[in-house]
Length: 406
Image (cartoon, rainbow, N blue to C red; front, side, top):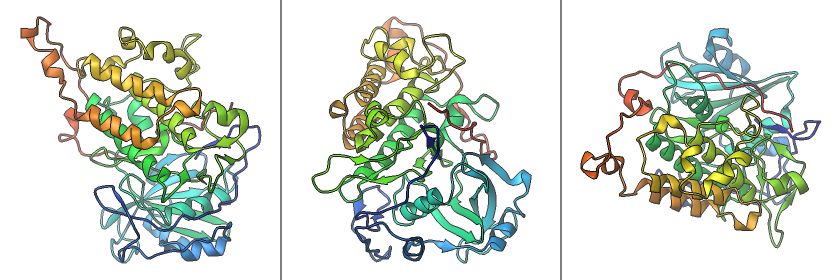
């Protein structure tokens, strides 16, 4: 989860101003609540803890259940660690949700709240509030929760390939660099998740869009996770939601940092940062870079608009995998999302359309590298595409350290 950008960290009380349970068909399109998902009517006022837990379509696990499922939270079951706490791998029966022996049944990820962590019960409850109601192919599935004495846990579907952050920035035999095509696929999936949240029927602002919160399944389908900072969007004639500034340094929109005014376009800016990270292979903030290159957006913006200079910001591990025209279109989209003024940013529906057009582009690398065109064919670097069918999935990658403060 993200952290407050001010000196103190404080989660806000979850409230709901009209989100009903949504059922989304497997093709990703929103439809009205059907018989497959029970209808939940949400009052236009903040809900109590009891109301949230009673109305969610989630399994209530006992602590004993989850101890058994994770082999008593053994250290070798740890999948990752973050501001919320540790995440453990476990196994449950697919139908009864009862704990099973390791290697049998359905694999799950169990997130356990640190008792002394910065982020506490309110963010845990916010996560239950939203993921207990919202269903979409590009949102991670929350299976259930545990609330027992001082213990707070969340049970998710297991995402075998871990976070986008690890695939972009970690080095090692497991983490092959993502190919250009896979990066487009992940960007499109994440964009569809945000577009669903922003839709007229849902109206949720995610507020913590970043690479560590984008998880990948075995086929590199992207799913948004970690809804502890999510907020209901403005209603009626309101243009924004006023809130304490929270999130992760490097991803927050400038107007949100300056005023605390939160809109869906705040998420669009964060998407632009992530898209730029995917194009460049660089982190949003990296103090290890030379002076002038610590902040990715500030460093890259001058190059994004110039087709002749884009190559300076593109990840050199992608060499030979894209045409310059397609790369320019992707860079232009990132630049639009990163507009200083929110009104000039596209909405996420427009971003989805643009990314779909890039995926369907007729301009292929093979045409550009065809010797008959007078250019020498370049050897493509080995990427995750090359090993998908050859390598069985490894353990869940460990996320990076806590986000940066402003």
